[in-house]
Image (cartoon, rainbow, N blue to C red; front, side, top):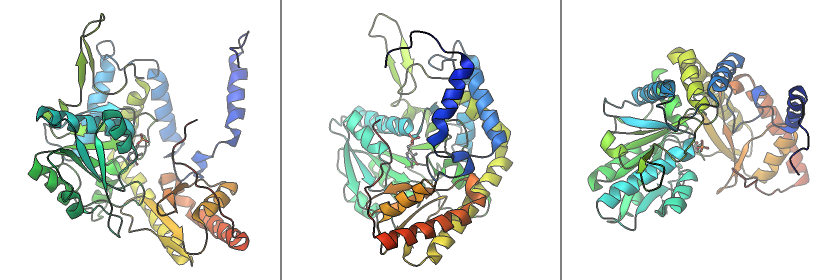
Length: 411
Ligand SMILES: *Cc1c(COP(=O)(O)O)cnc(C)c1O
């Protein structure tokens, strides 16, 4: 399509955009158990207003926008505090979990290089996020995948057995994306501490939820900087921080470890160029939105939202376990749950749910469905379970099968 020969009035453009949205999932009504998070109209309004105030500012160089420096350092400090970083903990805001993970792998590779390692390897439980494979491909770090145990948690003994002089990083998740279980972080971090290498905890999902669950009285195994040997942690704010998309934090235990993550060059005609992350030009919008939403909600807000999301998860788990032929995978520790079926094709159920207006993730192995439960779902679990029962009846009747829908897409 060519660029239009004439412009179009703004109001017409906006109504076209609204029309384009007609077939998108209604995430504000809680119809998506993936991709989007909703804490209510008031929170969205704060995020949207802050994002709009800053969307054309540029965090590439905060000399021109000292307000972005202030907000970024406030956000990083609040997350460091939640994760029990001491005064030395240091990090940056990034644009998402993938960027935070890429940077954690780069930092581990850099520390390994400083010791003369030229063919670096990292040891990952099979449950660790696909973003680590992206990092492996981008940064040429070999991905050594180690099967998780029957409970879907990482197997530290089997991971330790794969350690070589070229290992630069071991990884645990808190919780894992696929089954929502927290890995035995202390045992994984001990491997790293003994070897003098990095241990990254992927708390993209749990970095806010788990500290809040702990405050609410849940028994959460230690997963943060209280655990010796943990060198970096990723936390997504655009998930359970309920802020605008494009906001995550990468934290290092100290500045010395962070040194391997940053990038500086003067090898061009444009002078000194220093960069904290992957991007160059970067919108200040998500930084302002994260700062604003965290100030707006405060600890009471996150406690309320976490409680709602966890109670919804517990209601979902109880409902799933009461349906014959449905099996929950593992014992979800936070707000994610995966389930499969004894007698029908999981992806056919996923498709039948989609035709009923519900979007859940489809994953394998094993073929299963996946729900990321957030506060918006609190009042909707019974509706969802009814849709699931109807989908089961339909698929049992037709014995339908379906292809897997992908987590991410290339379009
Ligand atoms: C979402 C997620 C990621 C990737 O984050 P993006 O924000 O999608 O780039 C990595 N790890 C876990 C555990 C996640 O849930």
